[in-house]
Length: 223
Ligand SMILES: [Zn+2]
Image (cartoon, rainbow, N blue to C red):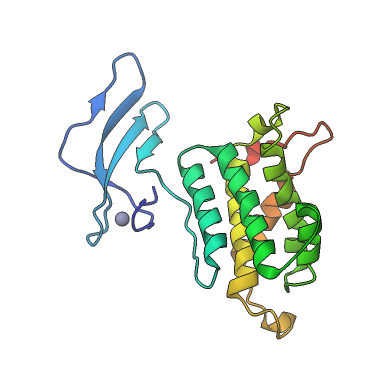
């Protein structure tokens, strides 16, 4: 698992305290610590013995986010989205991803009557690859669906949709605030992550509204 404190991946070590096994279930719970000698963060874990998988951990794992050069209101919105995701509040996370886009448009002076228009205007104010600009409109739909309380659509926003939304937003912020695109395509840093995230989005249509107005689920992304 990824350490919630130092964010390194590692095999967490037992603390010498026996795990508790819950009779009649396949679950056990126990204490572990981060294997990094400079961290050793203490984590409470719940394990599914039949699948061998980690069922839950506390403090929860959080999605990594490099906020260098990103304006504070944008950082605050995305960090709240990440916190919501870590605590399995996926609808709230989707709303905060949408708010991150609003803050991004505000910072770049992209005006318009609604977020769709503001994102369109953003395309003229930042230098981003077309695939990222196209993806932004799909990303807007994620938060849009999450906020439609009149329908059951928001129930469809789950962990995978939010994870893709956050990863995609990170790539957009990287492109806007952390990379120099001005020297032409040859100077653009190749981003394996960007390609990976975008191809996953393309392959699954993860947050594209379907004809029924539902967010398509992305079962292929389950880990
Ligand atoms: Zn650690």
